[in-house]
Amino acid sequence: MNLRKHIGIPFLVAPAILAAACTNTAQTSTGTSLAEEQEQKSIHILHTNDMHGTYMPFLTTTGNATAQTGDLGRDTLITFNQAAKIGGFAYLASAVEKVRSEKGAGNVLLLDGGDTFGDDQLGNITKGEAMIRLMNTLNYDLMALGNHDFDYGLQRTRELEQMAKFPMRAANIIDESSQQPVFGEPYLVKELNGVKVAVLALGYRNTPKTGNPDNVKGLRFMVGQEAARKYVPELRQKADVVVVLSHEGTAVDYKMAREVEGIDLIIGAHSHDILEPRKKIGQTYVVQALSDDAVLGDAELIMAGNKLADVKTHYHWLWNDKLQPDQKVQALVDELRKPHLSKLEENVVESKDIIGRQYKSESPFDKLVGNLLLEGYKGDVAIMPGVGYGISLKPGMVTSEEIYKLLPHPSKIVTLTMTGKQLKQTLEQTAKNLKPDNKLAAVGGLIQTTGIRYEMDLTKPIGQRISNVMIKNQPVSDTQSYAIVTHGGLLTGLHNYDEIGKGQQIKRTDKPLTEFIIEKLKEKKTVTKPANMGEVTIKR
Image (cartoon, rainbow, N blue to C red):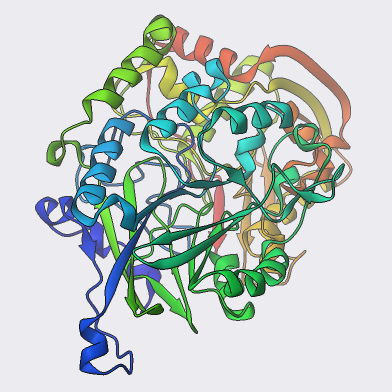
């Protein structure tokens, strides 16, 4: 199956069907006798991932509703078939309770794949506490630590881990002071319906390259499958089923499934994919449940005796018109928001269009930000990192918290100069990020630029992919210096963009990027999709 063409099928059927669990009903041969087949039993592993602090419902679009849906640059195209409200923690709670009620709470695990409590205005105000309190009401069993779960600094992550009623772990994130996995034992073993299930948590190998490296000082990040090779044999002795809860991304999860023996199921995160029907590589099943609290994943493990016979996938779409919100959780949401409503619901600008973020292709929202930066700071080129979180702005009034979903971090605006050669090297690096020679080296999406036109050919060798680079309709000269506007995060080697930090005449302002963008949008009163889309041409 060509996943690029067909992954969107669950989204393109009637809404009434989408509201139900989408179930993979393919039959498998287990080689068991009829009597053994009759003794089969099920356990359910519910899973979320990449919530990025999203606890409120949001409106989908038929294009890119979130940062990694509708993006033609992705390996798998994901689209929604309707504009309707989806998600929200109160609706997630109802879906979880429904499964526990129907299947028996003792037969259900609830896991989260990480990138969980930040990237949101209330998340910033409470430094992650809001999401932890909400997750505690659902009785999560385990959370893997994603790269953005360190955005408030390691000490704050420690505090949140203590606040949580569930462990937050990663076998491949090593505390250098103890030389042990961060926060303690990186797995749990639990008996469900008479079956012992082991779950091993893995974080993201390139975390220091996705945020401020100071936030993770004292930690060492290993490749996840190296840790899996160490722990899986041990867990096979302790459990009937071995599950890996991974924040390494789908491509790397597939690699792990091919190369590490003994894993029954990988529950993925980081790449915001939805795998329906579930992928099976050798003896390992791989699943993932989109992002932003829109879908509750449900991996049903079919057991013949104490041996795994099959995995069936159910995706519970959290369409608000098909579910009733859990009243207790809704009350907590209201309580958490109440002291901050004036900030969260402050009107910023009226949008005339859908203005979304794309991750691996040119991004309308980031182009808008670049335009505002060039207007305010009179540069030649604006540069923003290619990031994979955020929910599209919709036509109508846009609030402060909607801007913070797309620009959550406290980075400050920076101006500098770069030579044409440095700019070309930076563009070659983003091409390498998009299509590296080694999947483990992949980090970040397409760097988002304004004011510079170029062509990228990903079919060519690394280092030879960028051509026809133009600024102000003139070919870029290797030796000429150009005025750049960006933010402080890109001076640290974020996403391997080392040349930006080597620029000249670096001036750090005291102006937070998000604050500046909100001020400029308020001045404009209305905003549309940027007219200068198409500065980048990509051949894949």
